[in-house]
Image 1 (cartoon, rainbow, N blue to C red):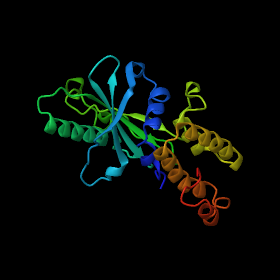
Image 2 (cartoon, rainbow, N blue to C red):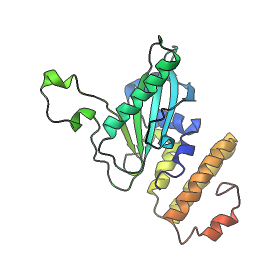
Image 3 (cartoon, helix red, strand yellow):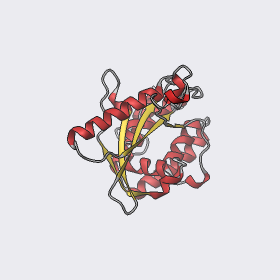
Length: 235
């Protein structure tokens, strides 16, 4: 599956922080205090795989209010994604209200992290899913919009630099030669060694243990992968 390992990766604060810093290219992001970033409870929609949803919250600089990033990990196009993300967001709000009935609600930003094989064509505004409506009626229709980040096709911002974990992930997704992968893995090993974060190392090893044999099956055979042992690629 294209999303193998993504949940573990984007459960790591270093990747979510790098995602915010370089890939959420909107003016308001610069007003977030990324030092306050922390995981929070994601909604559990019925009849949907809960492992595809992650939620992180972050405060505004100098303030106490939260903004919530609702991350949807997606390996295939979904024509109804705009409506679906609105549903997930409402579930999150219902959970918050159940715990704090009189509290002010945080803004929830829906973000779809897509690493599928085909270009994403689905509507990014729920209003586009309805028959044409007169302006006076449009205000009563769902207007959920989401940000789409395409790992295979979106430009990698120059500001991300060589030490951005999401940039490294995107470049791995686009790599087509062992030489290109080797250079990225060398940089990845250096960065993780500097951080000395075991959970981050394990998340990357789990991702690479699935990604490399799928991308280069003749090179990364089961025997080669087994030879690396329990520690995986980054041991």
